[in-house]
Image 1 (cartoon, one colour):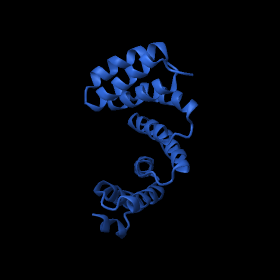
Image 2 (tube, helix red, strand yellow):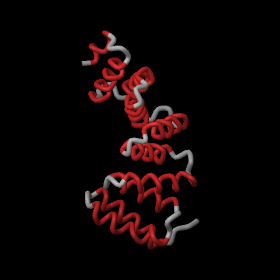
Image 3 (cartoon, helix red, strand yellow):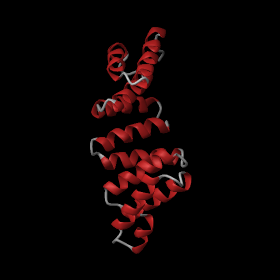
Image 4 (cartoon, one colour):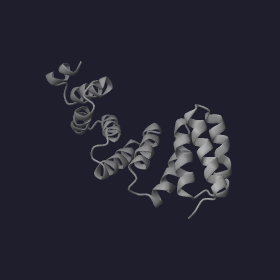
Length: 166
């Protein structure tokens, strides 16, 4: 399934516009590839990432799931899908995607942090603590990680060990 060169160039321009902070232009540029090649994995990936940044998570979820059909072991796709699922309060699904991503790449700090966040939202505090501990081994100076580790500990019956995180 090849993408015509001119559409590939349009996707590159859309991504460049996104990186430059011009989401309106990026979304406008996506219209052609989404209309002419709506199931192409690269179209779905690029559009999904831009839609996440623009806050259009429902549309991003659809497109990222399409891209995952072709690239089911792509950790960045799984993580991006989880980000959108978390944004629309589909936390259990997000946790499943993050667990799948970590089974492929166990040292992905971003996935580990987001897994902790999802588990906190599900009130699975002991698992969230494990996720944050693993994250903090990789990112030992991350203040938000320490804060969330404290929340996970407090959720486990407000143990005295939670106070050491603050």
